[in-house]
Length: 115
Image (cartoon, rainbow, N blue to C red; front, side, top):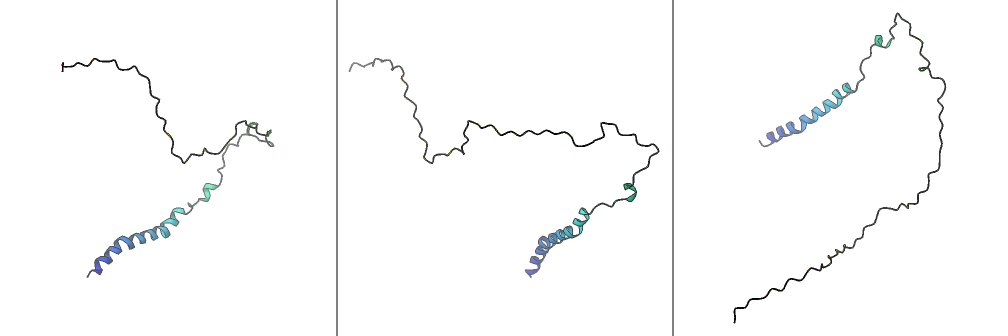
């Protein structure tokens, strides 16, 4: 009797998601990646009653543009580039602050009780 609940659990949580994944991969995926259907009428140019005006001189391109390239050697820098700074593995020494000289405490007379 314990096999039936186990089989239902496996069917719900393993087999059903696997089936949905396979369905999406083999059926829905090719539909998504398919090229849209093209209409032949849309690819034919539409003839207009008016002829196209001649393109202006700014739109006409004749020949290649004049390009001038100058290559110079890079200037040597006086700064020497070194690799990353190496850190010491020794613990750093903390410097103790230098003692400051302060005014000595004023002498306060000690009161005695006469003994």
